[in-house]
Image (tube, rainbow, N blue to C red):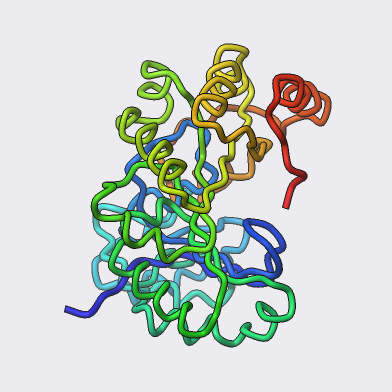
Amino acid sequence: MPVSAPVFDVQRFSLHDGPGIRSLVFLKGCGLHCAWCQNPESQSTRPVIAFYGDRCLGSFDCAAVCPNDAILRGDYRIDQEKCNRCGLCVEACANGALRLIGEELTPEELMERLMADLPYYENSGGGITFTGGEPTLHPRFVKRVLELCGESGIHTNLETAGKFVWTTWEPILRLLDLIYFDLKILDVAGHRQNIGPGFTGIVDNARRLVAGGFPVEFRMPLVPGLTDTPQNIDSVIGFLHDIDRPSIHLLEYHNMGEAKIDIIQGCQPKLGLGRYSDDRLDVVRREFLDRGIEVPDPS
């Protein structure tokens, strides 16, 4: 069977998520359920039809082509239980009010798109970054793309929350130029409540990466009242010193992901939090610096 994975976006010309000009490859599927998830459309591996109500002209051309009678006429347009994600309604919508999120691509199909930007990668020291979702749900796909990138000398990065099977991923991780590993909540009970199961395996994987000399850099999402508590900051600082890796990237929370919950008719609760304040970021950054942890400038 050909190798493929559900890709829900390829974001070109990014100046973040690694060095240089990059293409971000967003893969669908995640085994966690972070309360602050910025990409709720990525949580399931299945495609989903998004509905942008402000673009809808009310023509209901979508209903005329739907084979499963899955078009609703209320505030939301798609009956998810009836929808088979065929995409016919998306094609029929002249104003772009419907969008199919999630497309099965083979490594070769993905690379065909990425190679168009090879000159930008070469001139800037950039490359591609796997993100999501949780890209480690797709080991065969990622491995093949990494092999193809290696043949073309393309720098590669992978962003992970750390929940993966080490024996499966250890040889694949060796193919990467960079690994961004998120440390979110370093407390068993808080992790289970706000993120999901797998705390011990995640911590073990972080230790293995450092001990094995992998090119890993740690990151911490700052979510008010959830990850930026004094107790959690203290735990993260202690852990970084314990593994002798005194450096962390700080990622400020923003609430743009909450708007996506409505367009996919998602069930993720809304936190109702604003964007992380510069003042609070300065306080947290100073706490890490004062206790011997380097905080690189955002990149």
